Image 1 (cartoon, rainbow, N blue to C red):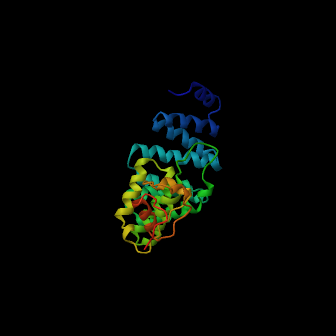
Image 2 (image 1 turned 60 degrees about the horizontal axis):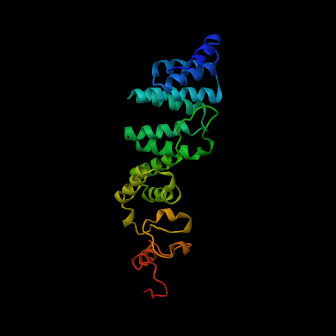
Image 3 (image 1 turned 135 degrees about the vertical axis):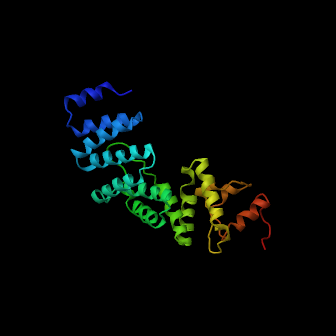
Length: 238
């Protein structure tokens, strides 16, 4: 159901890009993508800056929702990058599109540029679906595909250590499965550390774990020994 006030405002001032944009977003919200595209394009044609950027990305979102149309999506995202090279959202959506198209070289490049510009994410209008953690996922994924194994492992570990609490159960399991699939456990140079700021990462607690500030072994061997003996104190470690 479209807000009648939005329609009334548009009728009184049909060339106003802000009113065109908000009416387009109202149609987009109820999945009337044809009408939404029409009003987003009108908004973009008569505006600059954030409003044009938002309007054109929402044109892309409409086409994406309709399925296929990858050529059109590519064209819109790249046009917005040419006009707004410091905004990360178009880079991010191109990186996601490359995963569908198995375009690993381009995907790595777009993910890298999205991360470089991540601090500029967001505009004064609606959410453009930028997800910093997902960008890290994508960069790690493409890095592995391009034989950048050490970089891929470091990025996955960065997510595991710093952003695990931001992931839902499904994405957490996805990350763990991917780490196993990519053989991180077999990497002799992989360093896995524990510190008291990331207690939520440790699934199997034992007596006294809250007193540990940091471990010192390469792959949590000391934590494993404590777990096996339920936090035994004053023992001898060989």
